[in-house]
Amino acid sequence: MFRMKRKLDELVNRGEEVRVALVGAGKMGTGLVNQISRIKGMSTSIIIDEKLDKACHAFKSAGIKDEDIVNTTSLKQAELALSKNKFVISDDYTLSYKLNKIQGVVDATGNPPFGAQLAMESIDNYKNIIMLNVECDAVVGPIIYDHAKKNNVVYTGSAGDEPGAIMELANFAVGAGFNLLAVGKGKNNPLNNYATEDDLREEAISKGLYPKILTAFVDGTNTMIELTSVANALGFTPDVLGGHGVTAKIDDIPKLFSLKEQGGILNNYRIVDYSFGIAPGVFAVVTHDTEEVHDLMGYLSMGQGPNYVLYRPYHLTSLETPITIYDAIVEKDPTIVPEKGQVSDTITVAKRDLKAGQYLEGIGGKDVFGKITSHINQRNKKLLPIALITKKTKLKVDVKKDDLITYDMVELEDDQIITRLRKKQDELGL
Image (tube, rainbow, N blue to C red; front, top):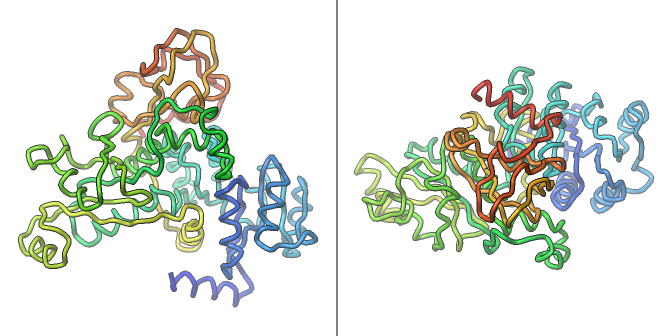
């Protein structure tokens, strides 16, 4: 991190800085604005949100004065404001990537269809794109990543999100010479696949969250999506549909996440999973093939093997995103990307009995929840990735509670960019 500080100091000494646009001024976005405001050489220059009062609040909470905030949808006026070191708020998301001074766009919306559109348009305009929208990445990340490479810009997930934190552990393990067997995350909330926003509205409001966001946490969909993002970065799959989801202490993880013939629960290695009891941490299970290393790991109080756990007991969500912003824009180095392609998928399961003709509520809604599976299983059974559900996704048949929903059961919104991208991604085999 001192390298980051030195490089940013060098930019400041040349009269330059890293400038980003933030799209989405919710809890994570506002936290990011405040964090960046204390980093010399980095600036959130424009915030885009449908609700301009939220964008304005994000800036003001970071200590920016009213007179320094310019509200405009005009590209010319926005450029003039930035040239005077003012800060811009707008409800026109295209300003985020049209402004010449902006080097990166941060998507903190959590909206998969919009995220796909924002990412592709930003890349078309040669802007680096930093995704706090893991919901989008998990379903069309490979094709967006491919497009970014062709345009010589960086597409990346964020440090601080569990996928980014897991990837840092995985990079450390492999870089140090260990064999990576399994990775995972602690689950923060109790699991109730059938939770609805009506059940959680009061709790969500008390936490400053939209009810659907908390619902996606509690019903497990968010965990499945995050594991899918990691799986597509590492080439891993879940060991079983939805993962094992064990309850454990961190010291139990090495034994549990070993093969059945070794006394564990796994059918295979190279898997992603989650555990209750270790939240909010992330973990990686590793081993080695030499006795000297096993001996040294025991000496270092890492356990008796053959498997060992590397554990990070925290992740700081958007408060770590400045690290990714710096790496992407200055070093051209992503935190986490789906470089292995669509290896796993989060598919759609009915929360309740559903009727033909109704429009489905997607992630965090009352109709469905997500479970992770291998992409091969998703493809062979034509299972519907949950992030493809939009407001106009309609059921063609009755569906029973706990049924897996397939493409044949729904009418998708074919003119949505996320639908078109996934179809093309599948055709290209990405």
